[in-house]
Amino acid sequence: MACTTAPTVDNQAELLRHSVPIWPTQLRRYTETTLPLESLSRDYNVQAMQIDLAWRETRGDWEEFTHPSGATYHYNEKMRTYAETNLRTCSNEELQRLEAWIDASRAKIHDNQWLLVVEPMVARGIEIYPYYYVVPENHVITWIEPVNGYLLFQECTTVWHWNHKRLELEAQYWKHVEYFPHGIKMGPPDVRALRIQLNWYRVEALALEQSTAGSIFWSLEQMKEMVDELATVEELAGSTGEMSEPAVAICGKILHMLRHHEFLNHHGQPESRLMRTHSLGERRRDLKNSSFMTSATIAMLWIPVVVLKHLKNIYVDGLVNRVDMRRFVDDFNAQTKAQTTVASVIMAVDASILAIPGLGSPLPTKTMCSISFVLSVYCIIACTMAQHFSHRMRSLDFAVYYLQGKMVSFLIVTSIPTLLYLTSLACSIVGFLAGVFTVEYGLPLSARIGCGLAIIIGTGLVIPLTIASFGPGLIQ
Image (cartoon, rainbow, N blue to C red; front, side, top):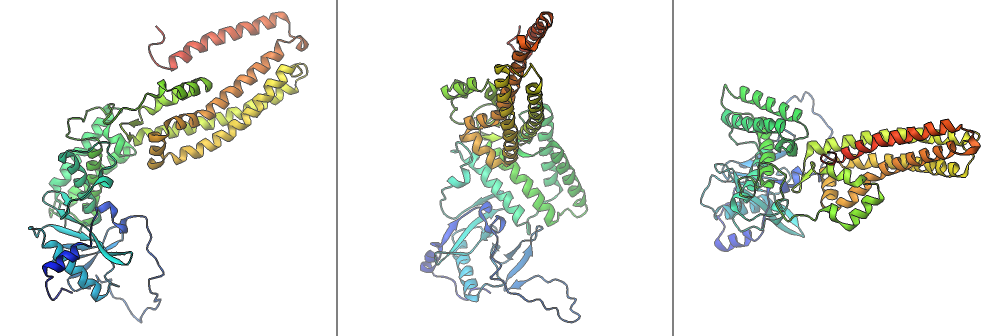
């Protein structure tokens, strides 16, 4: 339904006051917000012999389309506008006001080939029109007014150059392509160029630990499968030269991920580097030189320092390496499961030592084995809670929350199970030795000497291995 009269200048100005610039990732339809089902009508009846095919809803010049994921949206070919609203239940007055706002907005631009996306809504009783324009030939989104893009660019530490900001605007363009694939033309050359870029990232990941692929994809296997799927899409489009809407949406999703990653890594800017081991923003204070960290490290037997070394390959320049993050979580889970098993064994050993006549009678043995037993119990509890914590670390938002602002807390939390495990084991060993070397146990002098030599030899073998595990260069 088109407007019968064009809006005057005053009406245009009034309508444009209701404009709100947004970008594709802010569209409500593609967020986790559910639609209220109470407002939908119910009709469970089926007519006799009703076998009609599903029809595409139309209203005036507006035609309804279905996204490959199932969501619907409307497109007006004459106005070159996508509407994120339910036109099935939209009143005629609301539709007229929407089209009047579209005419007023398009009167501000000089290129009718630009696409417009608008999502009418009511906020505090006032009808507003969140919108953005799409420029297909330039692969970018834009607006008809200046926009404060703090929320859009805030993921990056510093943003100042247009070329840098444009990367995120292009990423949002490809997100639009993913959401609204209808009318977007892509051919085999576009898919081929995307495959070449993904192949470069895959080869880079095979040679470099700190790779681009590690920051974008969960695993190289998934990335390889994605490249193979693109090859299939390219072959299917080869006969006609046009790609289907699901294929266009797939390419849009991948290109959004790549362009957004380039934005985060300052791609094409002087501060970008081939290796992601530099800092793009203000350097953080070295945790090793922190007095609190030093005290915690000494109290926890240098365990936080070991954890910190593992984190250096996961958290670089404010970016979380997905592949290494998953590897860290898997290793941490395996470690806590092993510590739970050993803690159970230590509890059984402590109980056995206390039950042996003579060996478990001395007060030092009773004290140390009892402490070891209690620490083993808490070690099992801590390992159980640590596994739940590591499961939450698989969420990148949760991981970044700890790695950005609570790094020391993260190091201490992940070191607790190992600390309890080691102290429990040490107390059990000391308690056992305290009982063995007492006169009441009745161990011959030669056997005591043999035990002492075994302790000295074992300690001499373990110490170099422990030193070597903290890094190269300590043993010459």
